[in-house]
Length: 118
Image (cartoon, rainbow, N blue to C red; front, side, top):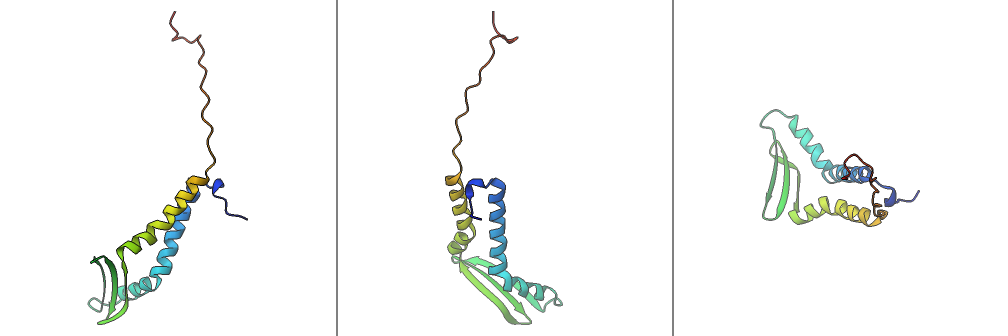
């Protein structure tokens, strides 16, 4: 079955965005989420999670008992392009492939209505 954007409604478009973002989080942050889950179950003071944005970079670090078990960083611009770019491109393609709407025909009003002037 071929992918046809002409048949997509707004609902399918939004659902495709959501699916993309869920896959992005699971693939891109899957190991980090697992490390965070492990650290949050530790007694207080045994682990920490920090997230920072500065100097044009986003950074996430997970520490367990003084040892970094996961660390990752990415430039803010590439991160924004990764999050927003594909859904925006999909929306543009969706708009360009939509069937053209015919202009609405002018409606004909009856001159015998109660509001007609005499």
